[in-house]
Image (tube, rainbow, N blue to C red):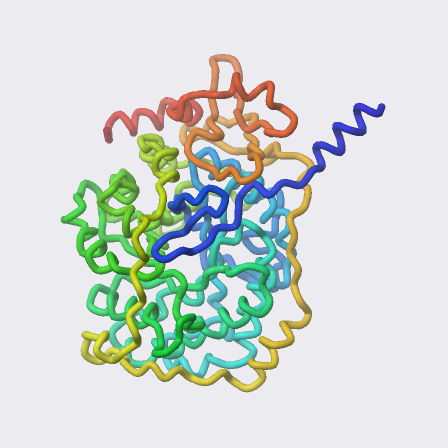
Length: 482
């Protein structure tokens, strides 16, 4: 009885599988190891923007059963980060955040939503910049600030989306960044990065970058300067090269960045089937000195046909698509231990240029760095905090086994799928949780590192074992492609 009680207590032990990351110059850095961190991410917004309904009582990170299913699928894929676009700060996210944390997966949260009053608009931005809107963005910060796997917040996504918006949006977008960073500084125990996710509009992209990442004169710690800068880019389509996809232009344009730069979306589908050839380039020495990885668009199959997984609304089952298999094959080619063990250069990080109208080269782009003052009541909200205050914490998960059905591309059910609960400070990578299907049964290597260590030696399998799990039909696709 005593032994049984001890085992129960051990199983209930909470773990912080991932260390909170830090920003040092151009790079995300793991403070436990001193190594640079490369984002291996997937955009995660089941249902798309239309799926967000704050009256429904759910959002992408509120259903434990669904998060357990998806964390296992993403863990097997080799992902270490998800980007979540629309969350409801009034809901409890403890279970889902704890599941992704234990799976070694970070979260990047957009603070906005598609609803009126919950985002800065690209048209007449001054009309949407008011206290109620900012109060909601601060509430998102409050809801997620205590989770160690909260990697960053996006203050905006593609708000500068066409030439006309370059004249009006920049000062307001930088002001929102300032306000969120002020809130983080006052109410968070650690410095969680705040930044911007830009559209790949080359005519204004680098002016957008310079506008958000320059430093206002005489300010060593400019609170309005973006901590990170990200890019939604679909310039690599099908068979291409570093030069043909204009990745060389991106590297040249961002090479002296004072902050981390990464792809917040990539994965063009103009050429089908997608082969994700760009993966091996993004994580190669051609790019990894400038870019900190990227986020593939997207997890769920929607009308725009970018999905890795097809979800059923009737029974919450999931079917892996061929894109999932192909992307996993590209991840499996890389030496992740070598990629994630690189140190930042010993030389000084690039210094942010002083904000000046001379930085702006595009005609019509706003070159005024005098930012809008905070709307009425915002200073008081930042000082006192949002009320009621959402509170998040890492909690115990009783069972790591996926209860919902998951199918391979050929329709075969994948059984025994689990989230592998990682050890302290361990981050997910390809091969950590592989699936193997034998002739007679389906098994998973997703065992708990706390109480099933004896099984782990037997569970070590080559990364390519996943292909067996997703059936011969998917392998035929791979054979054709490669």
